[in-house]
Length: 451
Image (cartoon, rainbow, N blue to C red):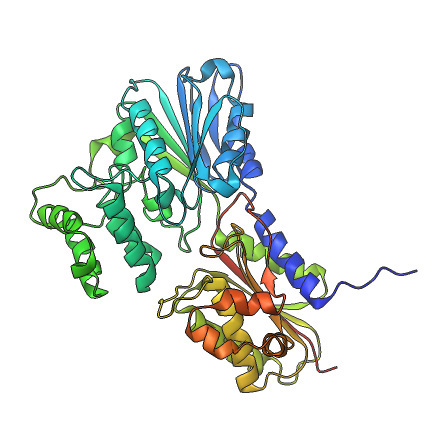
């Protein structure tokens, strides 16, 4: 008897999982870290190596993939070479036991007191490093929120309030990070300042589309080319300057006037002892998703590796692309994209950018009369979309009828940024659980000829 053919929804989920697997943080660190009896070697044949006979290594790992990355590192580095237990900071969903490490859970996407405690522990450890030692930093997405260490005169509540306003404003991740860098002691090269005079090397799993190292986790180990003046301009441009706490206003104004120390720039001597390697990225995961779609027998199209913009508008653009792609289509086609969209909150609902995109795509497909069988998935590779337990949504031409059969109005729910209950009613939430990695989002659109 032949095997049962997976449903279109199962195929879309399999393509998504292949993209997530390509960003496996444990295997990535294993590929880039090696020790022999004399030296620690960091890198690969393709990227080149940094090697040293460091016998006091400070292992610091933070982000959504922090536990897996630290676990890989501590299996490679001889225990006798570790200066002390490593420090690992991750979001609560991804907490795990890591040998030879102290693991902290912390808040994400909004920072919390536990994250502040962890950030202080890292700062204290790094303040006591010496020349000839190595600070090995393992960085993955989510690090910006997980390590809040506000600048002098700003308390955590004020920083949280500012972050909340930025997240709701529609600001890009780079704009949000610019502000956060200038309110922090660790971000924007701040961690590198604490680590000096030791050597520093960072292994980085990128959740930023262009792999800009100054944007990943707000660039704690690299120079920052943004300024206090930039941060003020961003807050003013989104109309939230007057809404942020006065302590934040005062500190940023002082910085813009040269009365606070700027983030370290490329010319700062401390960066002579720092280096990095990029382990994985959204682009790598997009390629893996395309490979999986090919294995499933689809003709494949790359829609974008730089997907950005307002989630519902991007969904409509993809729906229009699908309408064009189905004209004369004779073979099943997979359209793959990766990136990170934004949502400007205008309602009071529950959801995230991927759920919003999925619901918006279903509405746009109905609006434009998309023919044939189709399935659309939009999901976060970390397994969590906004402040929900879903990674995103997976919709098809039956989604809207299922929502309406439950007595709900999908268009009204979208307008209220309330995509979660809409997709929940249709049984169309993408529930992957925490994945232990984070390289932004993936979109999978499967198109089949009219049946």
